[in-house]
Length: 74
Image (tube, rainbow, N blue to C red; front, side, top):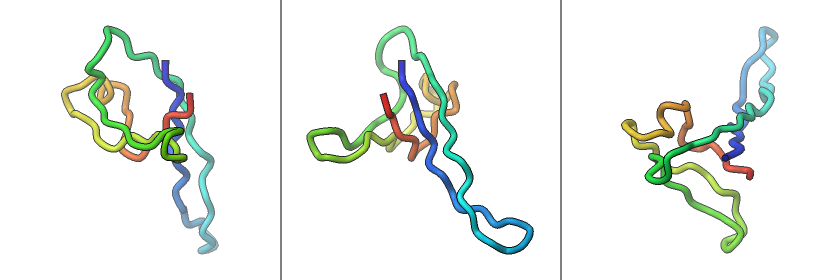
């Protein structure tokens, strides 16, 4: 099971102010073992968050709307 967080992106409001939308968090359970259809980078060894860096359009990840730039938090 993965807990993914989609990073906040700047959004313009009607008054022209730029705000950050709330982070989108979703829990995903990928079953059936590997390959899951994505590549990751980062981790505790390099003191960086684990980010999805590439999605295989034919893999399980694409079926769950996992995107490049999503962060695995657990």
